[in-house]
Amino acid sequence: MRVLVACDKFRGSLTAAEANAAVTDALSASRLAADATALPIADGGEGTLEALADGATRCRSVVTGPFAE
Image 1 (tube, rainbow, N blue to C red):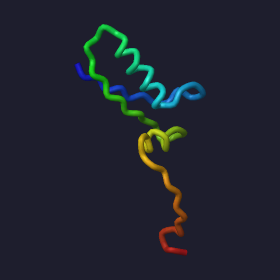
Image 2 (tube, rainbow, N blue to C red; image 1 turned 90 degrees about the vertical axis):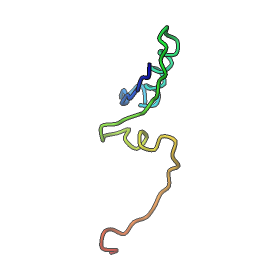
Image 3 (cartoon, one colour; image 1 turned 180 degrees about the vertical axis):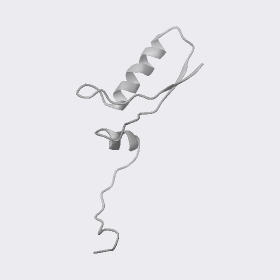
Image 4 (cartoon, rainbow, N blue to C red; image 1 turned 120 degrees about the vertical axis):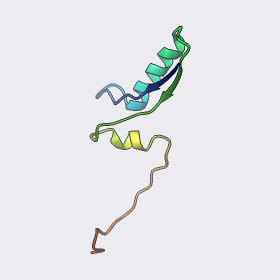
C-alpha cells in the first residue's frame, strides 16, 4: 500500500516536516505494509516558506519592483 503523508504544521509544537516524520515513523513501526511518501504542506500563513523550500537552497535578492524604480 502506498500512503501520502501531507501534514501542515502544528503551531507551537511541530513543523510540517516534523509532523510528517512522526506519521511516517508511526507507519514504519506499524504492522501495515505501507510505503509512505511525505510532502510538507502549508495554508499560506507561517510555515509556508519552510514547506516550499523543503530540501531547496534559499537565496536572498534585492528587487526594484515592476517598473525598476
